[in-house]
Image 1 (cartoon, helix red, strand yellow):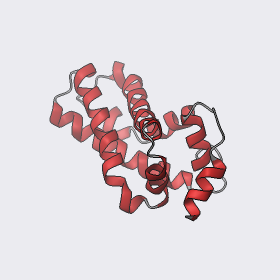
Image 2 (cartoon, rainbow, N blue to C red):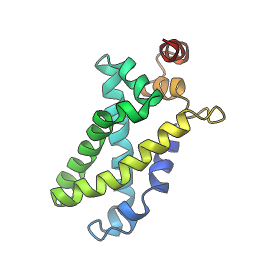
Image 3 (spheres, rainbow, N blue to C red):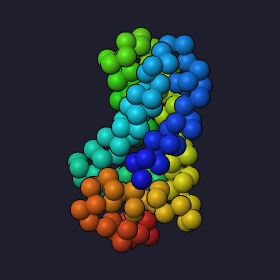
Image 4 (cartoon, rainbow, N blue to C red):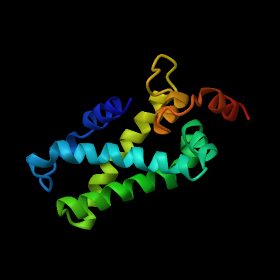
Length: 145
């Protein structure tokens, strides 16, 4: 699942990363990896802090709940771009916005696709918790409630 997330980010990285003069070619793969890990870190953080129901609502009703979670991911990735790659804060934020927002939109769409088991919400959340437990049943109950 994490490699599929990486590919999702890579497929959306054209303008934001690949064609961005602020990011040297030698850093393209690393920056794409940083974007993927930023998404994973924020989603995992939501689970670890007991905000599983908010996370489920984010995927279920993305138009309503996406602002703070997506903004957290955007900010985390922008900070990495600034701190580790020396990209100016405004450029880092613009780059982060132009990559993370479309990726999250696509991730939400993929999670709702019945044929795509890798990004199914229960499977995604189970992977984020290290496969310690299958969260499909719990997620299904939360989506009904």
